[in-house]
Image 1 (cartoon, rainbow, N blue to C red):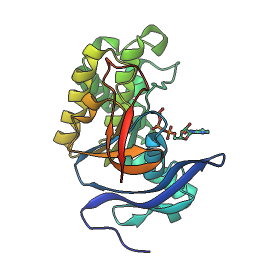
Image 2: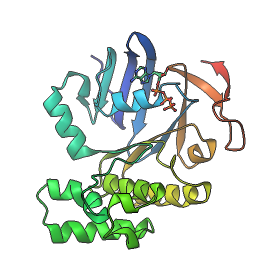
Image 3: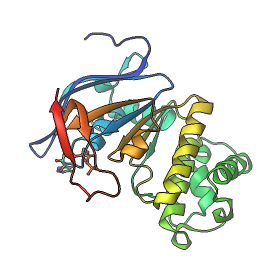
Length: 245
Ligand SMILES: Nc1ncnc2c1ncn2[C@@H]1O[C@H](COP(=O)(O)OP(=O)(O)OP(=O)(O)O)[C@@H](O)[C@H]1O
């Protein structure tokens, strides 16, 4: 095994992963530097989600290596990987998965309360994040009483509340209206920068990718030099892609 470069918080080499025999990643290597916001871009089905799941230790690659801060994630036991994800990583899905029985603030505060932090302190931290995300009035409501865009902001607050070392955000603004996207993205990236959080952001939206420090492009499970992604105005999923590396 070759040790990763010192300044990469996440480093992956030659990842291969297939879903039921159909390849989703075919030899992807990528390094993520400390505190950077890295966009992983590509059209639908290009392997972005699969790459984020491999990098965050949710799944093990069939071949290849994933390192976090110099530790080999690909050789960790499931229990250790689970602990790593809980303690060091945050995750935002394209669709918010909240606990229906809990109020909005409790959903946001959940990771702190699971760490044994008092309800009072967890609540204060959650309210702070809800205010930053402009949804403080949602705090006492349960998810069924919220709009999908509000639920997604709660999920974003929940991912940020522990100040993870690395935040994996898979199409984090997908359920938001266009007008809300820029504001939520700005809040997310500003919070990451002010708290020193490294972000790996999957998107097929060039506008979202523009907020990142650096971009890596995927096409058919491989790194490519560029992909021409459709803007919102273009027909969905009609990406014209170019230049296999
Ligand atoms: N659970 C699964 N079972 C079977 N095939 C899957 C599964 N998840 C993903 N795939 C396939 O693997 C490939 C990569 O999918 P992946 O979701 O990683 O791409 P993506 O770029 O994130 O796409 P999207 O933007 O649509 O989420 C696609 O061909 C997809 O159809």
